[in-house]
Amino acid sequence: MYSQLHIINNIDSLTKNIKKVGLTTGLFNSNEHAINGIAEKIGLEPRQAALFAAAFRLCFDKGEVTIGVLAKYAKLDFVDMPLLIQDIRMIEKSGFLIRTSQENKASLLDNAFAICPKVRQQLLNDEKLQQQELTNLSLNEVFEQTSKLVEYNNHHLRPNSELISDFMHLLTLNSELKFIKVINRDLKDDVDKLFLCFLCHKFVSYAALVIMTDFLEELFGDRSIQHALRTKLFTGESPLLKKRFIRVNDVEEVSRQIMPTEKTRLLLETGSVQKDINVCGHDSIYHWTNINSREMFHNPEEAEEIEKIRRILVPGNFKKFTGELTSRGMSKGVSILFHGASGTGKTETVYQLARTLKRDLFVVDISKTKDKYFGESEKLIAQLFSDYAALSTGSHKPPILFFNEADAIFSTRNNILTSNVVQTENAMQNILLQEMEKLQGVLIATTNLNANFDKAFDRRFLFKVRFNKPNEKALRQIWMSKMPSLLSTEVDLLVQKFYLTGAQIDNIVRKVLIDQHAVGRKVVLDDLVHYCEQEVNYNNTKPVMGFKA
Image (tube, rainbow, N blue to C red; front, top):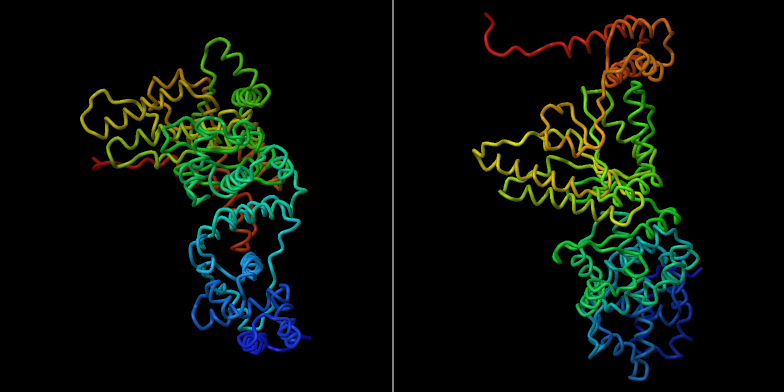
């Protein structure tokens, strides 16, 4: 086999002959063994393999090589240039050569290349090189390859025409995917197809919201293409807008955002592409499929209200309901407050509602809505609602905007403006009130301290559900679901003796598991009673301030 001879020996003997006679028929006849050995190793045609060998030798000596120097080394004439450039581009596309200079269209001979460092190391180790297989990819893999093409193009200063050519080759190799069939049918311009696939990669892998200016600069180095696309997007003339693949929010130009429409999201879902947990600035967007199922047990009053909320948030019902509100000139946002004692299941209920309704959760990190610089916190709150509006506009199933431990930001406004801090808190709450008034979507807030809420927020919440500690029936259900091995008499004893919350029972179950798996001790009823007493005693212990009399 050719590969039994170290490829570096093949390259050395071949390049000596290339330097003597050039890329002639005689060279290929007299060096067939070496050329075929290199071609087999790197998976290229014999002529391309010989050119690669020459480039490898020249780069090994000088670090890089221009097309002009390579042509001179291989004794090629002017008439050979078109084929040489075509071969060089094929070697580059295979990932063996990387461009080290901006393309010079005035003098193609000055364009410089280097051997890919990874390829050089593999050859020195006599490892076989293989071009990356780009057929039969999943839609996620197509997006990943699109991103790699963009990154490679930016890093190696290739012209946009080559990026688009490589991208269309990728689409051709995977044309049976439904998503690609649709964009090939609806979008005539290859630039628009590249734009959409790169945006979908951003949406799926990184962030739900993308700043238009930054996105265009990353995608295309050519400012004329950036300007043409921006103009079409601003005027509404872009086929991406007309065919409803993307939408653009209406904020000021510098922070204008682009995002996939519901149509595109459905195409992604049918293509088995699902968005992972994404972090977008100060907010976390949780895809509903990433929420683990958990059985919830509520008291009858709470269960009735929660079921009513669930029914109204079912997409079909929600659309009818908000449409009716609009026809009556009323705000069509739905704001919900879950309040009550700690550990009663408020937060988990929100997550389970999102999962059963198949709605994403837009979770607000309240600590990051506050900034040390005067006036910045108000901007963060306004931007948060702007981001949510951008996600919700045009969606038949907008995500849930979720404020957990909301008393930290919905607290009572102070009428005595004694400091900049107080002024900032009041300004933030005023913006919250305004944004809740014009909300188009679903907002849920939870709190243990609703007494601290500003009264102006009361009428903004359509539903206000109080979560009490579970009654005896709910407690029995919780104990049996957490510890099915308990006897009914044991459950009765625990329920009658200890008035616990679901969170407290969770803590007790964790201790039982520690005893079983870490200590290796079987837990009996007395142990459970002891753990229950610990929970009750801890919660009944009040810190003493000052001196005892």
